Image (cartoon, rainbow, N blue to C red; front, top):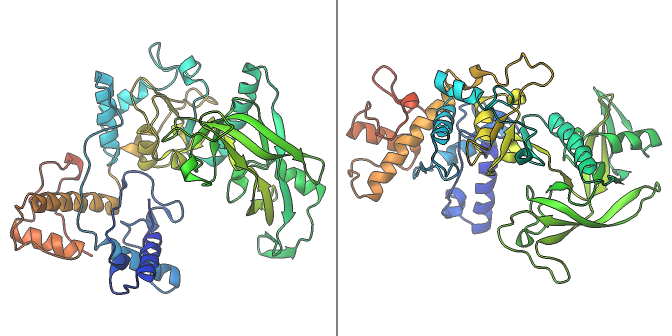
Length: 455
């Protein structure tokens, strides 16, 4: 999801490019596609989301001013079309319908006791008929979890298991690291200049999880042929080499680094279900090369010291697990999820809605204590935050207004160039208690719980 600041930056760049300073986005027509029921922006969370009233409330600095302008631009978007047909869960068994109902309620944090009972039946090992993570269908399938540290641990365990099952040895390829020119080490409030990496620090950087640096690039890649990987860099979209694209290791070209360590020069991977077939002369279909790249990253050492380095490595990682943020936009027929580290109903909804069917959905239990519940029902029951609740309501009404306009049934008395002027005009013409038939029960408004267009 875009933050208010990001939306303003997009508008500002288009204004500059088109030389139209008085028009949002420089007068260019814009289409925004997304789902507020999924995760808020990574930086700032719900406080930086487009529906947050805190955005720009105290615009005393450039960042908060950008957020205020972004929020103002967002409220000039008045044409809304809500796509209601479920295109992901294509099958229509009784359990698939129950999954769709649970997900629909989960969007608004309004799951019923029936939804909770149904989800409990998808917990691994909860009954004889429950899904089993040891089943072949879940082999080498990426587990979705809520924390990077758990994702990294799953990937290491998965890589070891894969190499054993395929009778291969994992080959370790290390990064080539140097101190950045402006490198400073920060520990609490103390700073000191670093001129070279000691052998001890270098080994620590190689053995650290990818999540201990700000760009999540591996210091050590442990690979073997056929290993599932995920590309971590937008390199060549026309060749399918994009961040988040899944692949398997095909072959590699290696060399020796400055410390005598093995380093990758080129990694050849075979793309899994690319948008179109990729044919590079001299290579099999869908096999593409990934080159070693150099990035400036900030690493956190074991003593919480932060150090800036130039890091040279092929930007891929094993694909036995991914975070809820990384899973957005994907659809899988087989979808094992770990809800123990998912912190909100939006996270629950994001990871569970990746499923193409109920039969492929599996919820992992807490293997450290089987008496613990696999997920917290309180996170998906009650009601979503008031700001998100209000955004859902306003978008529903704007969707209805857009439908009337398209069908040429909107009275001339309904007009407005911003969200709230349009909603107020509609409510003045119709009635403040009017609710479109398509609105879900959990977000319907009434005389006792009105929809007030308050900026």
